[in-house]
Image (cartoon, rainbow, N blue to C red; front, side, top):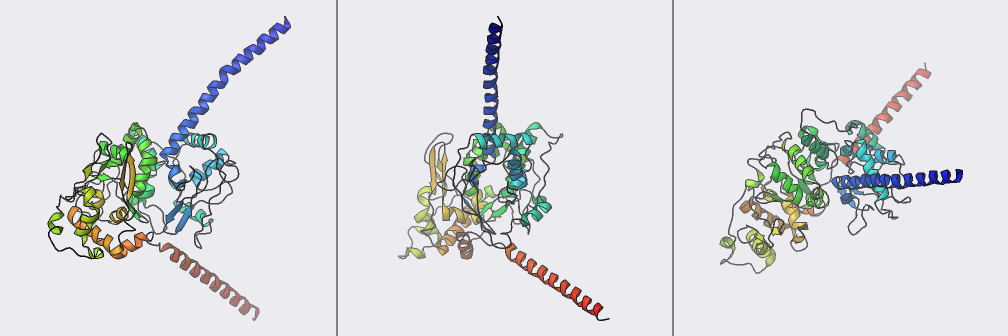
Length: 468
């Protein structure tokens, strides 16, 4: 009888265990799935995946005004990745910019935004990276910024000045949808990292939040609620659609880093989260740029290029083509003679080539994106159909790109915007260098001289005192 009771107890225990384990596994699976969604919202894959490389294995060279920063391996590799990180160490790297070995990260990794994350979301992200991401045992090249920025400890002082460690606190006076949008925009989606101007020390100028900023070569435009300089004239539905597809007819299409953000991240969010982002962005403080006189998407009109090209004398030397001739030879077959664009495939997400008028790329006072689109081209997939604007950087020289860009701006966009040959040359080379490097070196030199002077004065006083 005792044996029977023992076996019954064991069977009961076994049945209890078999009933508990699936629940625990389901809980872990839900946590990992949530972490995957959050990693998508944070667009982690974009920076931590080299072209042609394995996801999250690092190695991507990120151009900054101070030099190239190489992204790290964040797979759960124990030898080359973050496989040995505890959840606390993972949180410190994500929200404080400090690695497990105590070294500081550079703010190209937007930990200043990720500091807004709630503990539960950090836990979910940790579960996803540790349990679901395949480990890759390859070590990316080390980042080698010039002195003094090669000293990572300098970031400790920068963090004291500019890192707000407080997580997001909901605004009780706002709706749940607004708070969700704010949490995403300020945190994981890190909108301000690109769209907010930076001060002399490369920190975000929060007094001009979302007012637009140069990103080395591309320009992240003003996305504040200002109806002229920003996107205040857009509806919430249009903003949400742009975040989904990267396209709003008659207004804008995504290119460069924004196209990547939509393809890797924003386009994969839930409709509810995109609407929440739109609600928050639409409510942001308006930021007016002095150079703007009308909304970027309202510039331009159809212009028949044939009127200024065909029937006239044609230069035999194609290198001497003017802007109209360059447009006719390189652009008109896709964007049409009047710049109205063309539809190649139908349907809601049918791939199409955009109109050049009523197009923010040509309507902004900052003309960098016009040049970059011509230099690098744009390649995206919309609804499975590939949309590609070829890169002309190897076909057209700096003078030709400047001439073509100015033709486009004058005829289809903001005529006050200009492109210079020197601008094209600088953007082709990777963008302007930051004066911060020279300022830092000068500051260190002045500081060193002051230290030497103080020591000399102290020694002089000591000698004077000993000679009394």
